[in-house]
Amino acid sequence: MRAEDILYPTDKGLYCAPGDFYIDPLRPVPRALVTHGHADHARPGNGAVMATRQTLEIMAIRYGEDFTAARQIAEGPTRIGGVTVSFHPAGHVLGSAQILITPDNGPRILVSGDYCRAPNPVCLPFEPVACDIFITEATFGLPVFRHPDPIAEAARLLASMAEFPDRPHLVGAYALGKAQRVIALARAAGHTAPIAIHGALKRLCDYHVEQGIDLGPLVSATDPGDAQLILAPPSAFASPWVQRFRDPVIAYASGWM
Image (cartoon, rainbow, N blue to C red; front, side, top):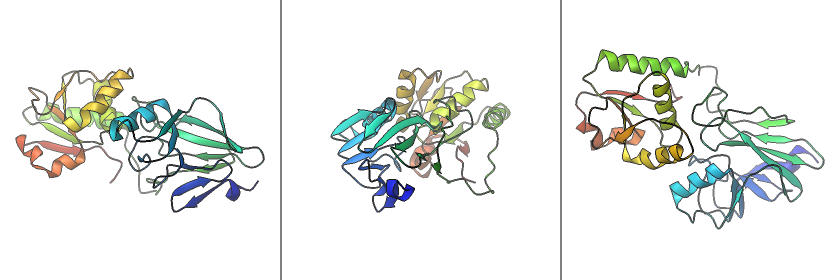
């Protein structure tokens, strides 16, 4: 079987014909395999969704328990139609996975989803997977992107907080993955004081704690007390919410330059 007969792009997303499923579909389909819980990959309304347990639970948190008619937890190699699929850690966010498609005859195709090869303290590390064809995300594939060391960036943040102890430090970070990673990096760099979080981050931070990820003491940004480090989704910085903080130092946790 040729690769183009196994997996190919459609207006609904990547479609696996012998398995009759889509990977991270762009619109509702009868059966979806989802790499992780970010909204540009995981969408509600599909008839059935297969993903890691954590991704399914994250989708339920974000979209409600009825985000799909049927859920299937990815546990080990699973036969779907004429192919076998398996999910492997992607190192991107909690529950993120690469999806390997193995046909009876033909090339093994690995769809990466978003992934991170650098250590990430809030999810399983990236797992190299043997395959014949690797379909990779390339958001930061251009040579211009040279990301600094995360530990060094956390140290810079704490150094600024020490230099300006009377100024709140506001960091914009996505609610899933980025916010929790920043918190964990700050803890690893030695910040033990409470960290204030915007209400939009609370449920997913709580979920990470429920999954055994230690984020240390967290308080509400509505009543931050003495917390000098405050995290919020980037959208909050364009709203009146940010005006409650006097003379803040503002930063964004992002791969964008």
